[in-house]
Length: 225
Image (cartoon, rainbow, N blue to C red):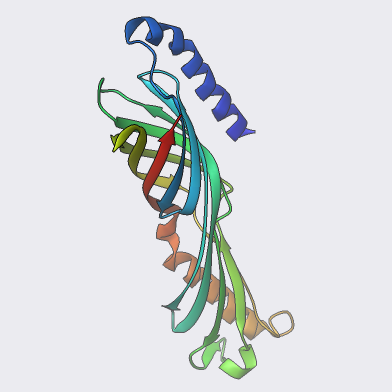
C-alpha cells in the first residue's frame, strides 16, 4: 500500500510539472531508458522516464547471493546472504543542464541471511554446563523490514552518443533493525540450551545491527529511446 502511494505521488508530481517544463525548457530528448545495474543491492535491471528537465522516475530490481563466515560471541557462523529488493525512485535535477540528481523512494525488501553455527566451547547458565555436542548445530535467519525507504544522490551523463548513458548513485537504504531467529536441537526441552540459544540470538542481532542502514553504491549503463 505504501509503495503504491509513493508511485502515485511521484506520478502526480511529475505530471503536474510536465506542461510547465515543456514551455520553459522544452521537452527532454529520449525520455525513456532501460539499463543494467551493478550495485551493493545486487545485480539488476532499471527502467526510467525523464518527465521533464527537473523530474524523473525510475523503477528497478536487484538480486544477488553470496556466502561468508563471521565469528560472533565465540561462535563461527556460516552466513548465506540473499539480496532481493525492488522499488521506485523519484529523481529531482536541481541544477539545470547537468546530470546531478537528488533521489528519494522506497523498495520492497526481501534481504535476509541464513545462519548456521556451533558453539566453540562449553557454556554455563544457572550452574548448568551446555557443551557444543549437547547444543548441536545452531540454525537461523536474519530478516529486515519489508518496506525500506531510500535516499541518495547521483549523476547521469551520456557516453559515446546521446542514446547511451552511465549513472552513478550513492545512498542509504533504511531497512530497519535485524530480526534474528535461532533454533537448536533440545532447546524446547532443555532450559539451559534454550538460554544459550537466546543469548546467541541477541548477540547476533547486536553484531549485525549496523546493516539497518544499508549503503547503496550503484553503477548503471543505460540506453535511451
